[in-house]
Length: 307
Image 1: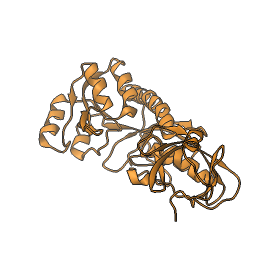
Image 2 (image 1 turned 120 degrees about the vertical axis):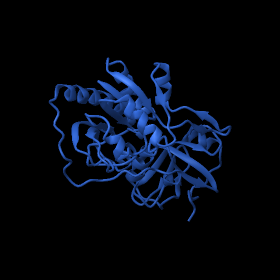
Image 3 (image 1 turned 90 degrees about the vertical axis):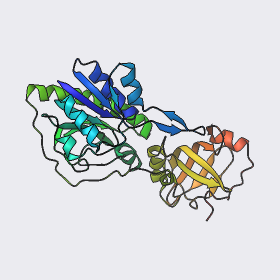
Image 4 (image 1 turned 45 degrees about the horizontal axis):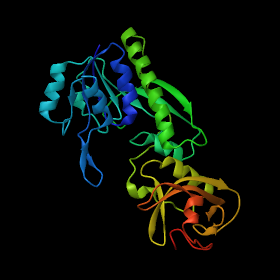
């Protein structure tokens, strides 16, 4: 089966790797353009591109997938199937119509839950106990196409978006190959999505700001879901500080106020207490709360994000 693969970030790498090793004919890999990163603004290739080039697979990076030139190139390749894994752009109808077996998407949620760009982060920050992988037959909507296969996965109490993403990426590759196998057998039946949908819009850097009025457990989930990007943050004496790991405890305190700063760093919330375990001051390395306290004379009663 001739396949064109669309994907960009690390999440898509296990799926492409398994596909390349499966014996299927991967005619080309389509990925987003290189991005300039860091202070030096050096162009960095997407993870999918690195894998594709390393395997000798033809790689395309169109500025726009709506350009006639790109569309005609896809037509010339005549794929039997298009596979999309976290490509980052919605495919137009003319592209969806090219392959006779359609375009299938590997989505990191149990659809119709968490349609959209950031299903892993939102599932964690909302405190969900379960998520999974859905392969679906793509249509013109936002993750609205009929379901092909689904497999569930538990979310561990200490999972972050990073750790959960790694496990879901591996599961996604497995479910993808099962889906392709059933398509080839002719045994796969697409089932319309049922139930009330929820959404996972893309996150912005400023979305990481901690709202101390929320409960300690909500803040704990928020920190987990925002790691490693955009990362939860707050400020102390006008210094931006990333908060990377916390624990939630019973107790009472004023939201955002440092309730204890000796031996441990405890902050009040809307309900319960937040124990900050790991953080990163602006321009500094990641450190434990103990290391942070040893380097500063932090007074109890001071506020994070002073009201």
